[in-house]
Length: 382
Image 1 (tube, rainbow, N blue to C red):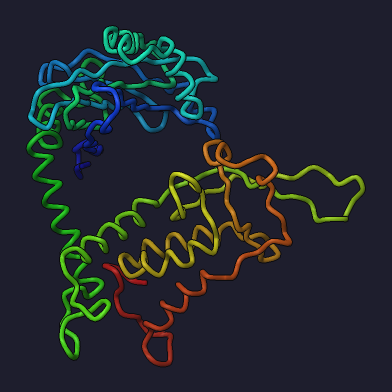
Image 2 (cartoon, one colour):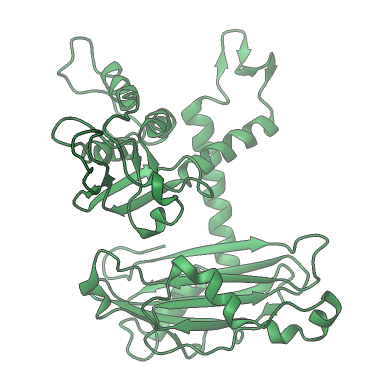
């Protein structure tokens, strides 16, 4: 939702959910913000999160989180929760300034703030005891928001405004209020509907889901594509694009087998970035070389320059001898999901060069003879 010109940058997100059937009538959802300065310790000196006074144009039950990161600047995150019927729901907060508290151990930290589990009947009688204590140090590195559901479906709108609102912010109250009104509530609902419709229209156009071929419309298993099949296609593409991630860190490389006795310890490469589609956000949240070659076949049809950016990042990880480590475990967050014995990458292990699939698609789109200007692809040049 960021504007151009002098308008502050930012974004908006809506989280919708409903309580788990058969569980306790009141359930808790925790959201967290963390300052990750693993590879930029200098930035950590000026980095801070804090809970600020709710602004006059926010809902009374809302939360105003202020933050600042050196060379990025100040920002405000304005959040509010409600039932789908429109009744406001309170958000509570807890924060920590301890250096060893981060997004990597947030689940354990939240559990420490709550009392031991009670039998269900007793837990319902003392439900408020499961609330976070609301204490947020002014220079927190980790900040957790808590929603205690009412047993009904709920929504949380969170709007980030670059420059910051309120006292010390760079954006005036009138402009902050206008941005919040534009990127939350009913206006955000209308924007989501509009962008959803545009996504489905572009999906059908890009992949020819509504095309009439020889003999009729595109068919699957002998039958024309219906709304159910198109909905599945939309969900599959959205999951693929939603699995894009940016990573930064060092790769651990094991020494060649039998080269020394005793073998030397694994070596680390220089820190480097990777923009990639991960094969599974819950289980494999990191880049895999040959997986991304296949991912590029879909991403490239949707957005050619985006697929080229991904391929360029992978090629940027190539070693002098042409080897690209097949699994990129960059940064502490990615490493936390991998057993220590599997962290080192071994030069004897390689993946089929599936990035060639993307390169072949680009060559296929060149005019006969090559060397000329190729056709536009996915909204931009290939």
